Image (cartoon, rainbow, N blue to C red; front, side, top):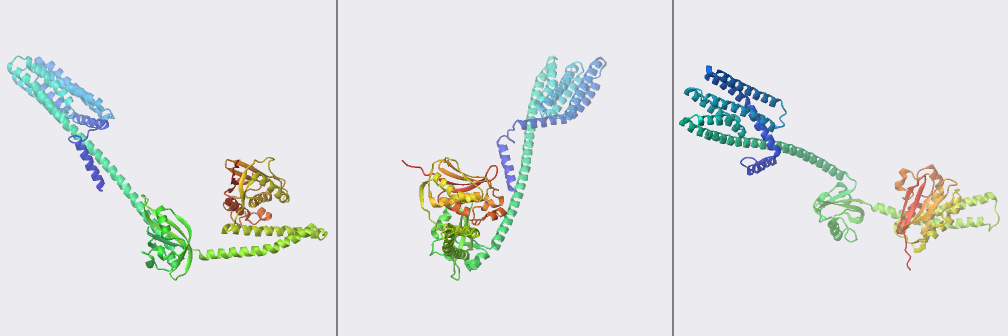
Length: 602
């Protein structure tokens, strides 16, 4: 609540520095102050009108003589008429919107001038024509009327000047022309008295104006003060609400960290542990009191093997960027070695200074061991299966070739079925071996510069027989653009075979699968387009994952391991390309892969 007071004091100082009391007002302020001055004139107008009528009535009684009866009645009727007109102006002002104060000031000034001239007329007519006592009465009456106008009209000094001028200047002329020496001297003093009264009215006008400006300024200050208080109150409420939200968020985060199944540690820029959750205590075997205040690099992370050491930590804190999926060796309190997967999130302020680091970790030792055992089992099983299966397929193919003589039709059909399913089983084993080699990092390519259009045509020939089993043709334009790429010939044929066989399996009978080659800038794109049922929306996010198959009847009927697209994606990425798919206009799907173009040198 100190800030509004400061604003008020500051505003008062700036106001005082611009003038005696208030700062110089702008146009809107001047109009508002003028309206208040006009309001002050009209507020006292009724008193002036009543005083005029009463004093005019008294004067009429005092000046009543038979020889001047008509002139007195005329003057008195004029005073009443002017008073009535002034009253009508006041009533009109009270009923008006008062949005033009200058107009109403002009009307008031006209009324004041008329009243003053009427009294000046009385002095000019009745002073020379009456006795000495009545002349003294007239002079006293005129002086009183001129002086009485000061408190009523001095809020606008020139209005008083018009009113008093209408009274005193004609009277001064009468005194000057009367002929007596004393009256001539009085004729000189009357303008002096008039000027003194105008000066007094002018000073009172300045006082009124300053007071009104001061009141207006302080009114605006009070309004600004109230507005500022409302704003401060709103800001305080917002801050309190934000504080409550932050406190609630803090409680939620603390509860989340406390109940989280993974280890959560907070560390400073020097890797000193500031706080841990119960899961971290269970993971590392230390109580929180044993960890807090100690260096995580020395207590938790093994310094004998590459991972999170002081050099890495210095780079991490300098960059202040999140780091995730760190698999590092850790040491429990009992000496047991663990492999933990950590993510590190730096918390920085608006200036970019590191406040703390939140580390989240989980034990992946058993998971990694299980994956190693699975890979070894898969590799061993695949090799052990592939050797006898190759022999079985070779024997079945010898029977089909007729080397051992002709077979009955039924036996030939059984041999064909056995050979075909054996081949599918061999393909599955090969796919499993390929995917395991790729993911273990043991897969190697033999890239060479080769014309991509020739490889596309070769793949069409090799896969045509397979497509005909589903009643589908593989088609490509007669002329394919010439483009060379740097890729593994065998593995690129494997990618093309997977894409074409998938398109053939899911295409309607009799509808061709179209293959196109497009060169776009520095990349060459091969498109395989089918008119199949398309890819279900819920399956699109995992279409290139291992063992991924759309769960539909037609997919199961067509068969497949769910490894083909995963292998295609990894093979193309190893050749610096990319794989994708899109819906085909009119129905179906477009699978494609892109490879960088190898520019031929002269």
